[in-house]
Length: 83
Image 1 (tube, one colour):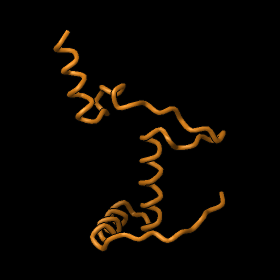
Image 2 (image 1 turned 180 degrees about the vertical axis):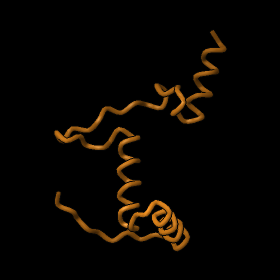
Image 3 (image 1 turned 90 degrees about the horizontal axis):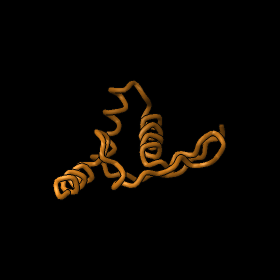
Image 4 (image 1 turned 90 degrees about the vertical axis):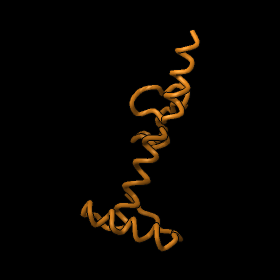
């Protein structure tokens, strides 16, 4: 897999927090940033699959399970109480 490089500017507090987290997880700083970016892409349904297509996205209004954002769960509960 070809890797591309680019400059990433971060404020010092964010950089130090990422560096500490990377150390806790026994990763390099670069490895930690890649890990977090891939996880965020996967959770957002935007990580390309092996075939190059993106995974389907699920809108926050469709999420009502344990992994849903708090606002989505509250909205679902309100809708259920109204009916």
